[in-house]
Image (cartoon, rainbow, N blue to C red; front, top):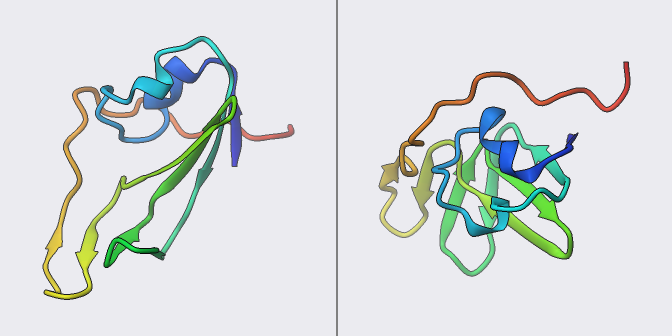
Length: 94
């Protein structure tokens, strides 16, 4: 979990497409990076190593790893980011 001072910089730490409108702001973002499988309710999918981001009152989950369709068993990758991350999430405390 990390606090990124400017949400427009979240892509520097996690593989996002850069098209997410909620990150086109200078507001801070709380980012939680999960390890493992996370069932996504009502989607019929399991996301592997997703992230959760909160910017202001907006909260969302983003697939940053493989996605498995529970009905078909098909596994696919989320969209490839235009720019790969350049670092890891900053620590909450020294």
